Image 1 (cartoon, rainbow, N blue to C red):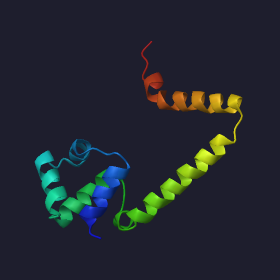
Image 2: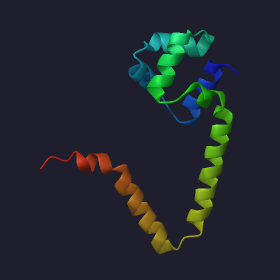
Image 3: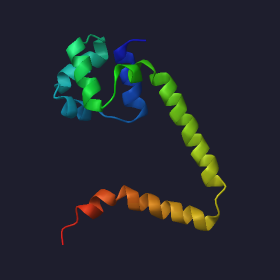
Image 4: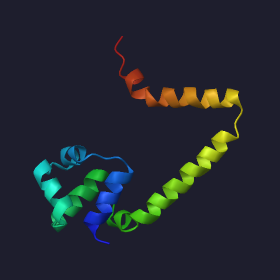
Length: 110
């Protein structure tokens, strides 16, 4: 599978919007759309995208396996969560909320 097809899978699975990809790569939205629709991409654009996403070529070459492993890990976490007591589930929920809003907490101005 080529890089663009793997990139599409990555963007879809991890819910990454193309406007965000355009923002972090400094590649125009128009060009990102062209790349995704035509699969025509330069090596320089590939390197820019890979670097901006903090990945390497091998990551995109193995995207199917990475997605499958992520799904497996999520299923395992779901099983572990299901075995918790109600009290522990509430604690996990509270901790998750705390982590989710951590950025807002640390940026709080007093």
